[in-house]
Length: 385
Ligand SMILES: Cc1ncc(COP(=O)(O)O)c(C=O)c1O
Image (cartoon, rainbow, N blue to C red; front, side, top):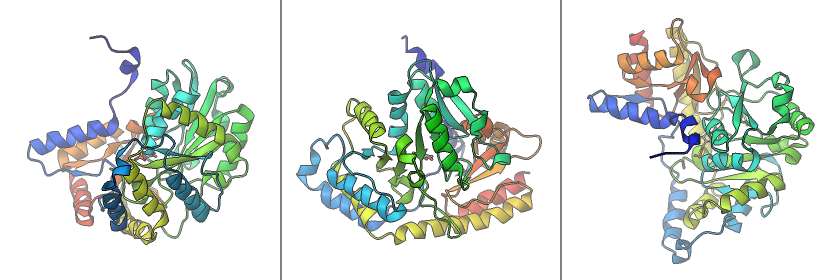
């Protein structure tokens, strides 16, 4: 069988590989604790599940959904953006529901990368920025986001010829995997860079609701001029413990929304209506569940940080996200440390290089396991060193 050349360029998907490793170790009888994948351990809040059950029984919801999402879901998304960030978007032309933001990430490159062109992507970053570019026939230009620069890209380091043949940039703060947050003025610089080089910015805001110590992550769309150059992706996955439901939305620049919609309408048929009703319940219902989730992760973070310090592992204290980005000890690479921790402690951590070359020297720990298991994982890692 002859497959397309682009498949050969696609790396195996990081988390599918992690799943395989967990399964193999479990088959050997190892009690594996996975800190490798950022999948909330808490259930979806009850009022959201109830909305799905009720709407799932309505035959009207069993037919094809509208291509551009239910008007009521788009309106709920726009109203949530207004309440949460004070930004106003037109629900009909500036909001587009997505079947999870991963779907939108993979597809938007088809709208903005021609074969042979570059995309500008954060490195380390969510792996689909890289693979989405490759699937579109483009070449990712990794923008290193290193600790010395607070894990923000240095826009002045992007070569002029690369900027000239790029039409899209992907960034996201609070960040996966580094858990960094955007510093003052960063988004302003991004807008001016995008204006100067005529580049569409996609700000991936999947972790906007998971923050600690009173920090409230902003929307990129609050930045003056942001709407002229870009869109923001919001996901209900982490905010409302809905990773399995597949619901998210893009908001912002009308032309970008139109271009993504054109790709999507030719590829998918939208989100199950009952799930969109559940999404409305999430966005419009009580929000205390969101604060409760952050409180759980903050408690876990506060448990993890002193232990890492005791073991002698360096990590910045996250202000947001469900991740801790940990420097590997001297003598290890990301991969060799992840392997060591799996073999010697039965703990899965995600190697930093899975997120791009600048992830070398780090591993990512996820706070999405129960407190006791998290404590045990750290104890085992400590003993393994
Ligand atoms: C930065 C980032 N973007 C997007 C996604 C995809 O989220 P979903 O497809 O569940 O909306 C994730 C998931 O982990 C993520 O970390």
